[in-house]
Length: 231
Figure 1: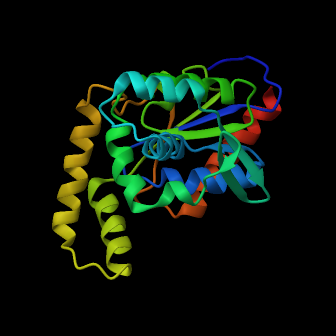
Figure 2 (figure 1 turned 90 degrees about the horizontal axis):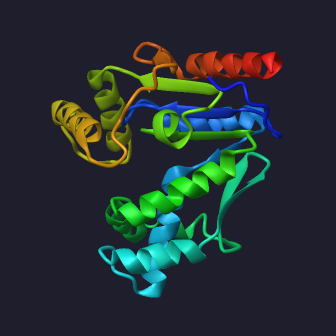
């Protein structure tokens, strides 16, 4: 890991497969440490929102590249809430619509968008005091992050968590089918051309199959605080 001194603290990279608890743990850890959560998913959603407003098709790479050049995305912490700002506008709510979510799936696959946001993410986090989660944060976005975690859990457990989430929303789904979808998603994430799921060699692996969120959070918080103290 890097021994670089940063102004605001260390960089924490959290990677792992779908359903491992990355999003929930990243938000909780950021709040406990007073760090900024750089929500990479929200960044892609912000691009999708602005593309929709500008009438840019998701296959129009030149126009998307130009849009990204003109787009400034920032995260602003207010207590335990982290707001998403695009060119100074609070888009925290607007980017969460179902319509934008569907468009984001297409937008996030475009190379000019991925390249532009990679540069933004690196610039945002270079002074430290940030936490990022994804599938290639510790290997591609910040290979020099001072603390790297790789969260995992069995496909069965991740499928069960997803099934519980869906049924609590009132959806009727099969547990076995949900588990099979998780396994399929793992294969796709590990084999896709851009940003495949990879574990950094120096990442701390945490298997949350039989652990509560609080137990995992305690391990992560203690590890980061020890690293900060050592620096």
